[in-house]
Image (cartoon, rainbow, N blue to C red; front, side):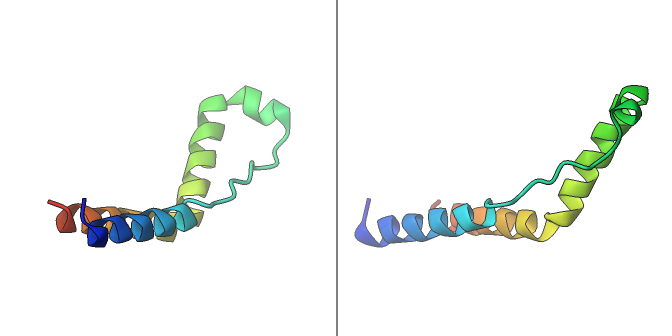
Length: 72
């Protein structure tokens, strides 16, 4: 691997690490609500996390796509 490729890989991993540094907050609901409909609770939880971190996910996807194109 050339020195240029090594440096690019290090930069890629560093940027990806920053984008993946997310805090997931568990929704505060009563246990009875979770027990009543655990599937809906899970769907709401996943949707909330996805929406709140969509920008980071999109940037990480683009970063990975660019990385793949440059290292064919």
